[in-house]
Image: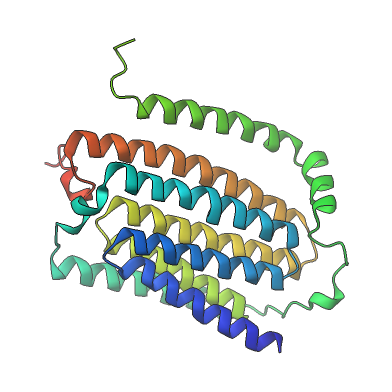
Length: 169
Length: 97
């Protein structure tokens, strides 16, 4: 039963990921990227990472995708995007390099013996907000604080970059 | 090799292929997001496999860095569009020899 759900979800994930890359219109790319993220979230739910699944939906499918859509719709990038074709050779080169990367990774990891996850054997609290919070605020408190500095700099940087002309005021 | 590993490898290679295949900076960003997400899923898988929740905490940090990166990247993209009137990456050729 779990296997069937996994295979269906994986099929949807890969198809929508392919559609992200191949669709001409970036708005369609974004929408299928949302589908991909939702599928990855369901994969996380299958692995009993409940809290992370919720955070994934909120951050990726919510915040980041809205940001992408805002940029497309505010700047009216749609017309500018459709122009510009590229040569067949560079497309072929991209295809070959992507395929070679996949083949190399598969051959690298082929011999590894990795067992299957048995979710029923895990702790019932595994992946809950309480458990993750304990680890995050004890063991990883310093990286957590540094992340806030990272966000502050990202916010200031985005505001500075987004200004029309910096010298005016 | 387990199924999740294969899925994440294919997803990661698809993301890398997308970065190389498309010339639109927005879609290249989306492909980078795909790659980051496949790594996230792999982290969650290994954390469940080894029964260790630190892996899930790392996914938080990856998400935070991805969010910051996308914010800055989109701001730079807006500036590129204002200066050049296009978001085709081939139009950025001032440094080309």
